[in-house]
Image (cartoon, rainbow, N blue to C red; front, side, top):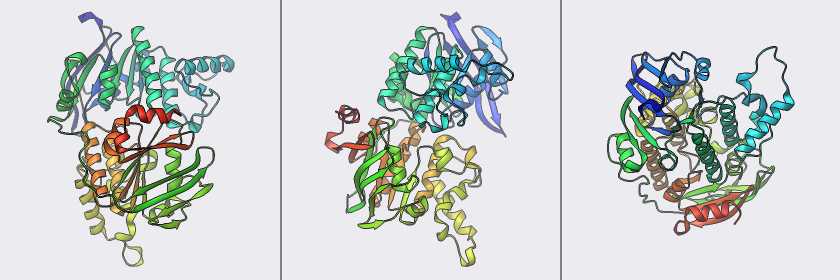
Length: 495
C-alpha cells in the first residue's frame, strides 16, 4: 500500500570536496519490511544511511517518516524519529560496561540511576538474543562478535521503528547468524522496518523482502526478492556479468613451509598443531569463541605463546612479537583492519611500504623516495585500489580499499606465509573476487596461505583443506573432497 511507507528518501544528493557520493537517490522502506541495500564499496550505501540517521547532512533532497516530512540534522534528531543505526565499525565505549553502553544514550548528568534495574534489563535483552554475556563486563574485554551483540541490544533498547544494520553478520558464525535472523524476523512482526546492508547475498536472499541496488552513488533499481536472483543482483551491482565467484587456481602444492606443534596460549589456544605447504590454501573454521583468531595471533607473535614450537621451512623459529614474525617471512592480515591492519591517518604509500623499509632504505637510513613511490604505485595498481593518489590517507578509503592496502604491505614484503583473518569481511562482491584472485596468485607463486573465515562458502570455494576448531582445539581436518557446510558445522559444534 502506498501509505505504508515508513521511510521515504527522495532525490538525495551529497558531495564531498567535489566528489559526488550520491546523485538524486530515492529509497523507500515499508513498515514491517526487511529491505536490503546492496552495492559495491563506494556505491553510497553508508552515506545514504548516515544521512537518514543524522550522522551527516544531505546537500539536496527530502526525507519523510510515516508520511511526514522531517529534518534530520544530527544523530539525536535521528533517534527522536525512531531511527537506530549499527555501523560496521562499532560506536561503543570500550572502557564502560555492557549495561552502560546499552543505555548510554538515555543516561543524563545528575540523574539518579538504579543500576540494579538497568543490569536486569540489560540481562533480559541479551538473553532475548540468545547470548550469555555478563552485563557487568567491560565492552573492551569482549570479542568483536559479542561487541556486535551489545550494539544490537543498544538499538533495541531505544524502541526504534527503523533499524539500520551495516554488515551485521560479518563477524558472526553460523549459529549466531541464525539467532540474529530470528530476532530480525521477530522485530518485523512488530512492524519494525529493517534496512539490511550486506555483501553476503546468500543472507540477503534468505532474510530480505526487497532489495535496492546502488552503484556509483545512483539508484540502479529496487526489486522484490521473489522476482530476482543472485546473478541479476550482481550484474546490477557491478554493471557486468560475473563469471565465477571463486576463480580457479593452478598452484602446484610443494613442500611444507609452516608447521605448528602443540601451540598453547592461555585457555583460548590448546595444543594446536597444523601445517601449511607452499602453494596451499588452508582454512580455519569454527564458531565464534572457538579460538581461531587467537591461534593465528599467537603464531604471528601478537599474543603470548605459553608453549609449543613453530617451524618455518623446516627450521624452528622463536616468534615473540610481530617484528620476529615479519623478519622470518610471516605476514598477518588481521580481522580488525581499522585498528590493527592499517594506519588510518597515514598515506597509502606509507602503509604499503612500512613493512619492507629495508628494500627502500639506503646509506645511513635514508629512504629512496623514488623506490618508495614506485613500489606503492605498482601495488596500488595491482590491487585496483580506488584512489586519486598514493598520498591519500587510508581513513578516506572505503572498507574494501582499506583491506586492499592492508594486503598490499604483505605483498611488498614478499612473505613466505600470509595469514588472512576474515579477508573479505565487509568487502563487496567485486572486491571479493579480486582478493580471491590475489590469494590464488600468491599460492601459484609458492606462498603458503592460512585463512580464517566465518564464511563457509568462501572456505569451501577457496581452500585445499579446512581445519575446524572448538574451545581452542582442532576438532578435525576436512580435505577438499569432504568440504560441505554440514561437515564443517558438525565438527564446529563438537560432533
